Amino acid sequence: MRDTIVASNGSTDVRILLTGTTIMTMGPRGVVRGDLLLSGGMIEAVGPGLADQVGAAIVIDASQTCVVPGLVDSHLHAWEGQLRGIAPDADFGRYWALTHDGIAQHYRPEDMAVAERLSAAHALNAGTTTFIDNSHNSRTRDHSNAAIEALIATGIRAVYAAGGAQAGDHDHQFPEDLLRLRDEYFCGGQGLVTLRMMDVMPSREAWTFAAEHGFDLCAEMGSWVPGIESLADTGLMAPGHTYNHCSGFSRTMWQAIADSGAAVNLVPRSDSQYGLGGFSPVLEANRLAIQEGISSDNELSYAHDMFTEMRTLLTVQRGLSFTAELAGEVDVPRPYGVADVLRAATVGGALNAGLQDEIGTIEPGKKADLVLITLDDVTTRLRGSDIGAVVTYGSAAVVDTVFVDGKVKKWGGELVGVNYDQLAREGEASRTYLLEQFGVTTDGLHVGL
Image 1 (cartoon, rainbow, N blue to C red):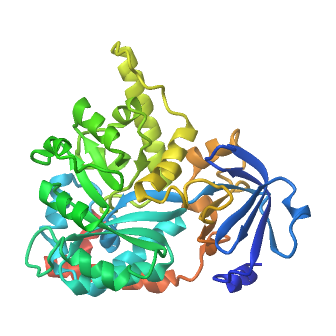
Image 2: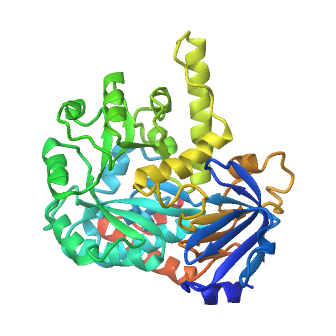
Image 3: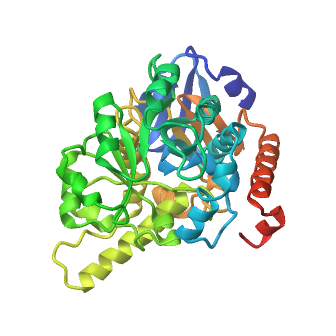
């Protein structure tokens, strides 16, 4: 069956029928027990008894799985792919010193490329079918080109948010180069990868450029940015903006974000790991009914894993909610359940990517970006709730199958179309080169830099 499915990848004539599964649509239909029909990269039908209604199709017995929409990482610095885990105890100062003030300045275009491929492989293996790639180390035009071309080649769905290098010598002009990138890579219609602008230190000038040239943008947002709340008075906040972190904002700023229609993503592990506000400000989003997304930020200190991000957000939100109630606050959002964090990782992620009409829920007419979670694994077999098993037990180990745009990217627990052994060797060689240029031997990795 695997060979048949893989051989059919990319064919618009093949229909695939998943039978006897539990489908967490995350849409109006809720949980559906039945079948799921895919055709031409799209979801054609959802419901019971489809096997009796469908003609020719590849039929897959999915009775030992449940299906969820592909997970969406709303904010990832994919160019750091080969740096994963090098500094497990870093705070933000150490992160910046290692990356932008240090290792980043030695990146070659080929290092950008292998990082993108590694990040995509790690994401797909863990059930993330889309990420917003906040790429803020493009030191030359060739660096940007290499990153985009590698990202397109992986077959993941992504938003490439182009941003310039943050420190050291570089000859890449941002945001002006966005115009070239759009003409050279994105003028032929919307493929799996789309283009945005990244703004690391938000400013009126950058946001004006984005508005004048029709670019959506991603911005690192928090009280650490000088004058950040004054942007609310410019009228430049808009739908199509995606705001990362959002730590330390006043209620007035949160209201301005809500009124603007911009999307927000929270970073449950990163905010606490690096000291960016302590805990993700999820209650502020809750109070204004903002559907947040979830993001992982980077892999410098921990591995990409949206399941862990969900569990962390679940714990943080419940803890903050209970604390607010005990403090006597009157507008306390209710404690989250597992469905709330799965919605953030799917529906909220789609909103952040500007792809809510295409992904995020399992409905006819949407893209076939899907994750099949095995339910007969040691981890998941003894369970009381399917959706509880996905969120509380989920990991890359129980991600059995991944579809992106109807194409199989993981099957039977193994990546499809990726020679990971070779890719890992390329990543190791790139990392060794970068660390040596930075002045550190790889022996330092055993204890954390």
